[in-house]
Amino acid sequence: MPTDSFASWDNTLNWWPRLETEVLEPLGRDTHARYRRYDWDLRALAEWHEIVPGGVVILEGVSSSRAAVRSRLSLAIWVDTSRALRLTRGLERDGAAALPLWEQWMADEDTHFTADNTRAHADLIIDGTT
Image (cartoon, rainbow, N blue to C red; front, side):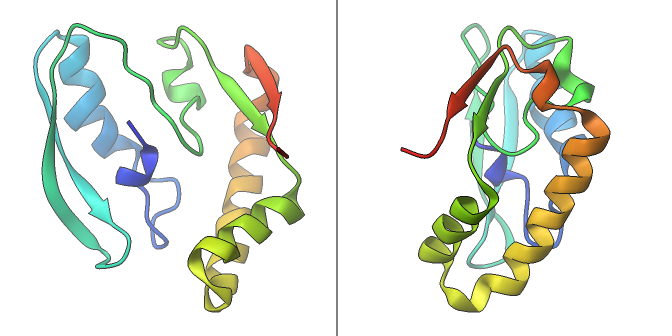
């Protein structure tokens, strides 16, 4: 499940309580989880998604191995990619007009990863340059 279904340009990191309430807590009780995907183009919540319990849950995206969930993870992977390359890839996807949004996003990431010490808690670090 991508964390991009919860994050937004206006809420880069503080969306976590919705993920906990709608997905992680129900799955932890072995019950169905339901969440509304965030639509980045419309900038609004979109269609509902359902997750049936009883399988492996892959949580993918920025801050998906944050301290708040770390004790419940089986494996945390850090994808190590330079700041310049991350920005280039983001602008290729979103267009040059998104530069101010990306600059703020990356500043928020820096603050979060420093405070959370996420990389140091990764079980596996992989090279994200290729």
